[in-house]
Amino acid sequence: GSKLDPRPTLAVGFALQGIAGWYMSQFSINLTTFDVLWTSALQGLGVGLVWVPLTIVSFNTLPRSKTAEATAIFHLVRNFGSSIYISIAIAIALNGARVNYAEMTAHARPTNEALQFQDSLFRVWELDSTGALAGLSGEMARQAAMIGYLNSFYAFTLTSFAVLPLMLLIVLQNEGSCCRKKLMPLMVVLLKFKQVRKILKPKPFLFKNQACLLVLQNLRMTLKDDQRRFQ
Image 1 (cartoon, helix red, strand yellow):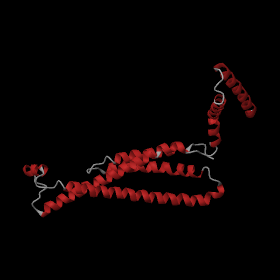
Image 2 (cartoon, helix red, strand yellow; image 1 turned 30 degrees about the vertical axis):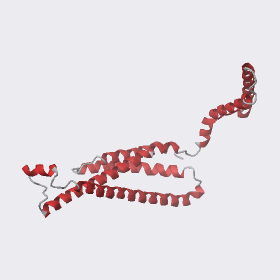
Image 3 (cartoon, one colour; image 1 turned 45 degrees about the horizontal axis):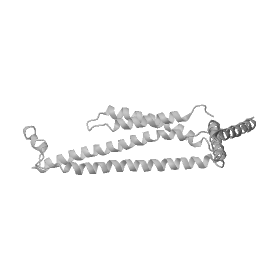
Image 4 (cartoon, one colour; image 1 turned 180 degrees about the vertical axis):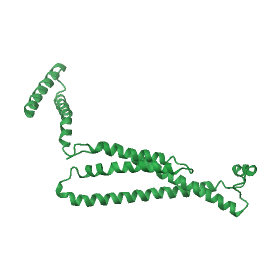
């Protein structure tokens, strides 16, 4: 098998997607083609770094006899999950556009000072003609749609960065025994602590030096047993 650990590559891929999503969430209505180009390229690089390590991690502890069934389930879950997230992202964008359009239209009134101050400028937005109202409504719809997209990009960024702590939960094949070996000293200490409690609890009448002597004797015996067991 491969000697490379897939978890760092997986983490870098999700981090790149999160960075790209963050920059996309900072877009304005006057964004350029280059802004879309480099953020999309960064996001695509992150997706490319994710898929191969994700497949390795998914099939690492699986018996070879179950590969065919696991492949079908893997792609089913992947397509199902992507469909759900795409639906959620579109719902966030549409809901954000609708809510913000309703909030902006509430300010389109003759008493709004922002509309009154433009009398001395170019009178771009007016409320006394149908054409001006249509133009103002179109501009508010454009701004509201942009806010909805930005909300969707924020959700994408949050999801990408939220996956990073889960990298610590990935355990590859043949790592289970190594983890058990690393935790063995802690388990021995806990075992000793339980044995000490059992010794001291039923005999509270012992003097302090007698209790310590009894504890030391018991620890010496258990250490000898551990040495024989590991030898």
